[in-house]
Length: 145
Image 1 (cartoon, rainbow, N blue to C red):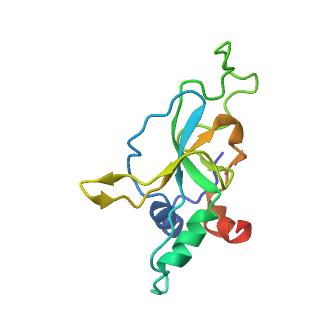
Image 2: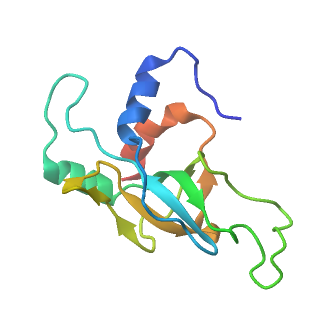
């Protein structure tokens, strides 16, 4: 069960900045998940501008993502097609911990405009855990980097 306060506008705003609405433009196949990486804020709550190099470093160190799509064989036995005995480890919409280095990474560009969202593929077996208390996400990266 996700823990968040219904009226916590600050958390909702931070999550909207970290995970902006977008379309990855790719449908995953097999055991791959498409995960949106956490995006870094360009300006702090106090109005300080965060430099691109600082944002790029934080982005490279990210280990938090939002599942946006799953291949048809995610959390299934590849040979038999049967679901894993323990069931799926996560669902679309879940925020997860994942390895810092995964398979493929991209930022969609449409009509010459680069998206703020960055996506990567993660294999179903690479999901480390599902974040159940969304209030820890803004602080989580600072402790993991």
